[in-house]
Every structure is written in C-alpha cells, then in structure tokens.
Amino acid sequence: MVDRNPDDTNFPPFETEDLRSNLAAFLAQPFDDPITAKPRAVGGFKWGVYAFFDYDGEPIYVGQTKEKISTRIRRHLTNQRTDAVAMSVLDPFEVYEVEVWPLPQFQKTGATDAEAKAHLDALEDLVYQEAIANSTFKAVLNEKDPPPATMTVTKPASLRVCLVSDAVYQIRSHPDFRTARRALIISRLAQVISERKVQGGLRRVLLIQAKRLQWLAERRYVALGGPASVRTETGEEE
Image 1 (tube, rainbow, N blue to C red):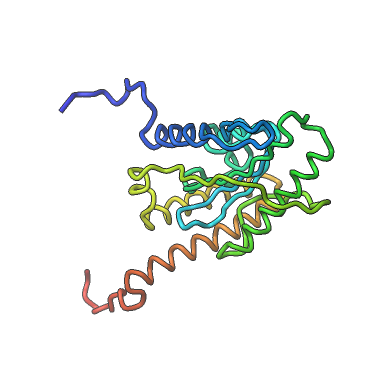
Image 2 (image 1 turned 60 degrees about the vertical axis):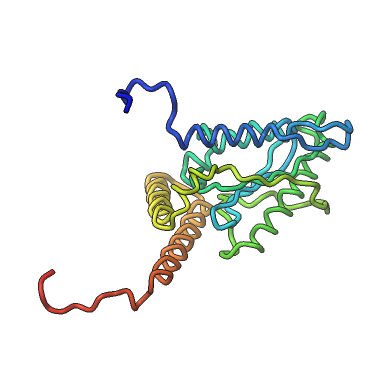
C-alpha cells in the first residue's frame, strides 16, 4: 500500500471528478444541426431547454438557456452559481440523467430577440407540463413556473444521457443513502426559508421534497417487511 497524505492530493474527490468527466463527455456529444447540415457538440448550442431526472427516472427540474447549454448545465451541476443549487432547491447529487432540447434555428440569434424568446418560453412550458404529468408527485422542484406560452410549439429532437458512472451509482443509488441525502437537503432548504423572506415557490419546493422523502422512506420500509419487520416489546431491557 502506498502511503499518501490526504491533505496533499491534487485531485478532487472521486465523485466530483466523475461528474465533471461524465458531464464533459455528454456536452461534447455530436448532435445534428439541420441548419448547417453538420453535427455540433450538444453543449455548443446557444438556445435550448433541459430537464434533470433522479435515480427513479423522476423529472426533478426543468430550465431554459439562451446563453449556451454547456454553460447553463455546468452552473447547475458543478459550481453552485445558480439560485436553484445555492438555496438547496436542486441537489446535484440527485441528478442521474439529463435531457436537452436544442434549438439550432436560433444559434445566431441575440438573447433579446422577442420571437426566439417566445419560442423558448413555449418549449420550456411544454417540457415542464409534460414533466409534471409524468411525475409520480405531479410536481417538479422548480421554484418558479415557466413563463406562460404565447405560441404553440412541438418538441424538437432531444438527447438524454446518464451522468453517473456505475461506480458512483453503486454509492448513491442505495435507498438509505438517498433518504439521508434528501433529508439533509430538506433541512438546508428549511433553514434558508427560516432565515429569509421568501416567496411561495420555495415553500412549494419544501412541501414537494417532503412528499418525495416520505415516499422514498415508505417504499424502503415496505420493501424490508413493513409492519412485520417491527419487533414486539418484551418488557425486558434490551
């Protein structure tokens, strides 16, 4: 065994490096661009909508970007520069898969273009509503609802990829680990709410997370025997 001082390592924790590596590979994946007739790295598209899914395939967050898909998703998952992560609305540890819907037709369009923004808002609302409809809890963890659609759009081609390696999956997928992690995030979110003047959206997220925690804990309890697994008191000290 090699003697190593844990304080002098130049590498980030294994799970952190795993996420960065898998995220970089995902964002570099080629995606057909019908405008140029050439593939482009999916993270290189400027406009688009994205959704995150947890280890049960549950949709947990939907967002949009008009700056760059790679920039926006990296902010969520690697550097906590979004309110969703900083305020414990979205937990990167819960993200198992990501799906993106790029909008190649607006690649050279400025961020203030009204028509492009209306199309982006409509696509986000469509993905958001479908995510809610497909959720066990009929909810996702967005603090705010997307802008109301002012036009009808259809979903373009998308790419959905797992961001977790088999090694990290073995660590994080265990239901007891997920229950503990979810309880921790709820505690952090509740603390944020208690310390600030917040809008109803954060309280809605807290309620949804509480329901998700109860569902996970109940499923684990039932899987291990439910009431039959509870011992009967004998009256003797144990």
